[in-house]
Amino acid sequence: MADDSPAATNSHADTSGDLSRPWLELAPDYERARTREDSLDRLVEWPVQRELLGDVTGRSVLDAGCGNGGKLAELVRDGATDSVGVDISGNFLSAPPPGLELIRGDLSELDSLPGLTGRRFDRILFLQSFGYAKDPVRTLQAARAMLADDGFILLTRTQPIRYAVERSEENGTSLGEEYFSTASFSYLSGWNDQITLTKRPYTISDLLNVFSAAGLWIETALEPQLSEDARRRYPHKQAWMNKYLGILVFKLRPLQSR
Image 1 (cartoon, rainbow, N blue to C red):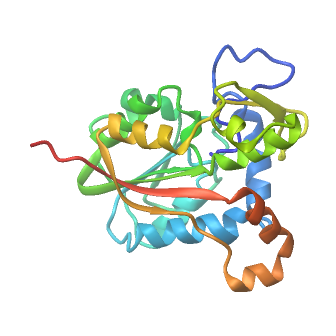
Image 2 (image 1 turned 180 degrees about the horizontal axis):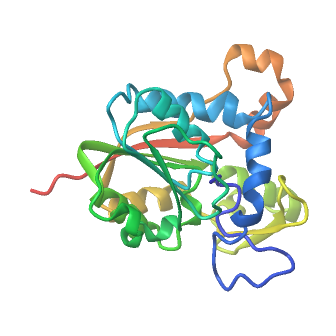
């Protein structure tokens, strides 16, 4: 599940506060966009995510908001085992590899999904999906409780300055005004222009406070950029990154109780 729309609504439907409902419609559009040759997921996000995960041989992985399960399937083919992908869309791969189970469910309810009861995982992923959590602290606490010894959470989110830049241009306001604004805002999805997305703004400090409240500490934080080769091949993507900065990637571990 991608983080294009943490709080999104179909322009013709009442979502009643359900942040994940639009993903039911957007999931196929996202998967098509992700596979494009110049996709930033392909060029920037997945390479750094894969590097931080390291050797997954014999490791169990939970992908919360897994989309169609394609990334998790790659990890299983690289040696991960007893791995589970959860996504509300149910738009899954037709033939997942052995060792991969795909469950239709809400990442906000990890602690009540029958298929996850009593299970532990070496790696838990929120790859551009965390914005859909109804209660971010509860969701991370549930994930933390499922971590095996020496396990960690890999979480990525869109750089919030991106949204501040977009809003400041649209509203004729300053970057600071929009970055610290708490008012929700709406725009048409870049994946499907029939769907209007309504987003809850957040700051970097908001993210850090959520991690702390969930009992997690940041082992690594990265802001990946295009490689030199990709910059030359896709100058339009470099222009986008220069303006909107890209994503934040966090490797999170549980705080040890004293």
